[in-house]
Length: 202
Length: 346
Image (cartoon, rainbow over all chains, first blue to last red):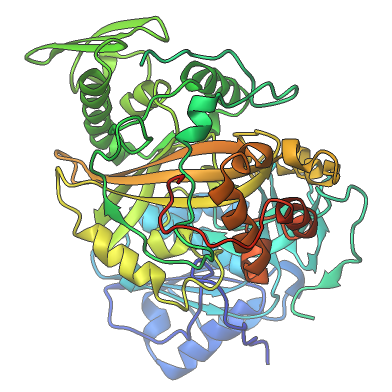
């Protein structure tokens, strides 16, 4: 099982649900890695849904494990891509081509869902037509509040900013506009005193 | 009185000082000997001639130097001033609100002449004279919110109102108590307050939001908030925290009276007429502990408040590590005598 129960947190931190099939003129599904499991479950629960689905899937480190199974669902369109930035133009095109009644399904890591959610909202998709389901890694997309650089797939706290090299602690404060959590210098008041990194939620 | 503007700095050599006049009118934030969150709002009506509550937008001896500091911070980090595209009209509302108030309250310092949409603005302390067409963005050197808030002390947040919530969709933020406009822009009322401890559980934000959603034009409100800052540093931003955080380690029992400042925000709330947005000015006043205790009532009270403050609040406000030293300093000015109600000196 790749589900994780996030502990209760502050009001800006996103919460995720379970994907369920909803009536719609078209269905856009975006998932990464273990997020494919949520799409597989969705398809199993709603026969016929995939015939009208455009699936954008990023296997990341899962290789062919889920990609093949998604192919067997025979979605109307299936894109398997190497990274979110690579898939983004296609996602934007799909959103800009969308008509009334599109349903959006996002599954996988928080970084993937957050970025795709941002694109969907900016394209004018109503929030009520977008569902999310977290699966797989609890890695976070982090913005360094100091240099503004984004570090993807952060799994430890503290971590080193990939851009400026500061040691940052992981906050739960989240910006939907950035699609990122906030990272803040952990040793500002005691330079060099950086506690050992721990896995998130360990 | 005529304001004697000072030439001083809020960084590096920190030459900022309060005159005896500024100390005596300082907005001391504690009306009793203890502190807990509350929705401590009152109508923003003119109160006590000479106090910071007398005018709509208080101008004091630090005006010119604060505006220089704002320009310095913006040059280093332009992201401190941002406005989402739908907020330009609210920016014009703010131009009108501030220019009208300053010209009305300080006619010797500011003038506003209007001929229909053709406006002529004179800011004597900053040496600015500007003719422009109201609501025409092309007639100002920058966006309307940025233009006027480069000439007004304090931070400003412009809040859009929709979906029964308030959205922080524009702001000028260079004198903040450790929050990032760049990160928080676009958030709703609950989201941008999310990191504040205890208050959510107390229902403070639900009540405050309900109140603010119903704020009426022409009936502004105000409240005080406070924290503690080492050195008279206006720009206690998270962006620069890795630079200024270390200053907290520089306090000693010998210098705490001079280096530790009480930081008070005079927050006010106005409904804007065209955009239906709210403007939330957050004006920062700084006073060092030495000057606080020059008012005996304030010295006694600040000692009791800081000594008894819940650990969560001292942590959130960022002075938990220095609390023992601060309380020890203040204890010498608390003889245990009772204090009078209210914030003003006896």
